[in-house]
Image (cartoon, rainbow, N blue to C red):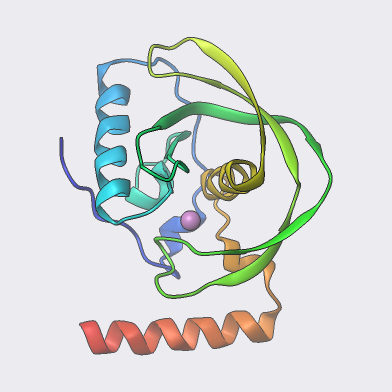
Length: 167
Ligand code: NI
């Protein structure tokens, strides 16, 4: 297993549309394992392949308190959504920034597991929000892009300042 470097917003590669995985093979399982290790080490509750510069539709997450429930989704698709909720989100690609985003309250997601078997999950709460946030990454969208242009400009300025300090 290996830790993978995480792209930082506003890296333009974060806007890449990820391609579907055609065959769930050993390479994909290794990607899942590396992404899980990277997510836990960060630490974070979700990570999309886009964030580690792999433009395939793969994401991992673990919203459990004790970090023992790793979930992997290959070719995830939201097939149903309901309600609305508003909550604060952060992102490993946008370090130190937490902003309020509106999402669907409940979603049903269809995907493949690392064995290549299809499954469906109905999610609410944090899991539903996290799934929507990570699937957005696979479509090239970062959560701060839901904010107003003014707020986004302020965030970009703050991130640029952080990058100068840490460079
Ligand atoms: Ni994110």
